[in-house]
Image 1 (cartoon, helix red, strand yellow):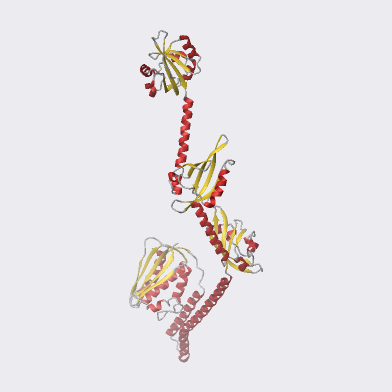
Image 2: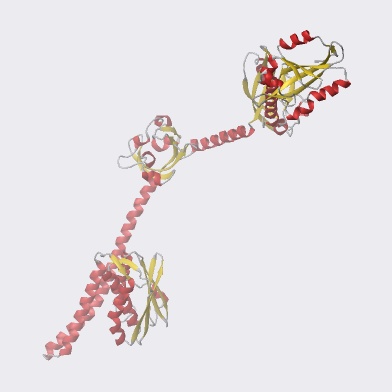
Amino acid sequence: MSGHTYSFDHQLILNAIQYSPIGMALLSAEGKWLMINRVLCSMLGYTENELMALSLKEITHPEDIPLQLDHIIAYQAKMDDGYQVEKRLIHKKGYHLWTMVSASIVKDENQEQNYIFMQVINQTEQKRSEAQNRERQQRYQSLFLQNPDLVYSLSVDGTLLSVNAACEQITGYRPDELFHITPLVMEEDINEITRMFHQHAQESRQHYEICIPHKKGHFVHLSVTNIPIVVDGEMVGIYGVAKDISEQVNLLKRLTESEQKYRFLAEHSLDMIVVFSPDCIYQYVSPACKAILGYEPVELIGVRVTELLHPEDCFEPCQQTNEWNRHGDAHVSTFRYRKKDGSYIWIEAQSKRIRDPHTQAVIEHVSVFRDVTERKREQEEFRRAQELLRTSEKLTAVGQMAAGIAHEIRNPLTSLKGFLQVMKTTKEEKDFYYEIMESELNRIQTILNELLFFAKPKQPSYERTCMQTLVAQVTTLLESQAILTDAQIQASLPAEELYVSCDQDQIKQVFINMIKNGLEAMVHGGILTIAMQKEEPYVHIRITDQGPGIPPELIHNLGQPFFTTKETGTGLGLSISYSIIEAHMGKIAIESTPGEGTTFTISLPLA
């Protein structure tokens, strides 16, 4: 409240303070309360007596104490005007109130004593409202300035009023440049945008897409949303937000072009390309369907894929079984499919599941159907040819075996026949004749037994067997034979017990055959070594002799019936060994150096 020094009228001042609708008080020149009205007491939460007991300093916010009354008095002593100041007063409950304090000096009737007449207006709500408005304005300003999209405002005649900094990133133009150039709208879009602009007075908002030239020459696609600014029912301008959707538009364009390319390939492919739903209903069928099945594509739309399937076959994508799941989202199937004329052809289908990128649920299947009937016919002919070839090879082998058997048996039979003739002519009984004849008969029996085993080996009886134990048993059995040939058997076996699932008798027979061959090869004696090594998933047993070795050109013949490098052998023992090891899912390797010896390596799967 501004003014001059007023004369003191006690009753007038009393009435003004008591009945004022705003907080009022009368203070002495020293700043002590003389009179306080009810409005001021209610404003601060005190009774009149409580407030009278406090000084003005005690109810003033500490930061506003420099503005308290003693400063006002000092100021008023120099200037003949009232004083008005914003300050915070402390409520009885502890919170502060924003107030506007006005003070004027009045004199008593003698113009001697000074009094201070103070008015206090509560401005807390106004301050709070102003703070909220400032915060709201700052938020809107931040939203406007920091928004990554282009935000602008237009007058009712379309003049650009404001634009945020994002315009430079999106259009290449700075805001100050944008105010001085012609509208950045393609000529073909101007009429439509003008029409939509004038419709804003009747509509709440409008959305459209436009293409504008960038400062660097390329085009920018924008998604625009305009909202009318309405004041008292009248449109006074437009707020707009333009989002750069160039990347999405270009991506959609590439996808459309890609779809067109794939559709062109599908429409002109010799294979039949189909799309069907998760419940196996045809949704798309390429034109190749006509050439492959005889149907027009439209005839199969809506048909279940399995309706044309051969009763004995299945199409995995329609089975919904774990078998399909084990193959993942891609799978190849082969089945017979019925043509329009009722005949069946073989189809090879390469199928792929298409999943929803968010839920991962299967939304459709895409398959490429190829007619492989001719391939199937060629495969069947090839299979029959292979069977004929195997039969021919068996017959050839039988012929070779027959020749070998005839040769092997003819020799002992010739001896028997000769000794019988000698015994008939001389009528003498000589024991050594009988011994020779018995030896030859035993030889015939051995050949026939080995031949029988080779032709029809017995079914193995598998059990978990320690290889060290088996080798030890065989070496003990053959040590006497080694001594007779002036040879030694040395076994180097690992401490760790190595187990194999095998038929003990058959594997023992293999070891006997291999060790006997090695001992018989060392006609002048020597050392036969047996070594064992673990090499996952096999155990390797190496049998090495110090015989003359085997010429390289003959190694590939080893294992064939009746092929042998020994003078008295039949070759059946090694053939039987190969059959036994193959039946045990193992293998035999041969290494030989002429003049140094031969190593047979038997590899068997570990149990």
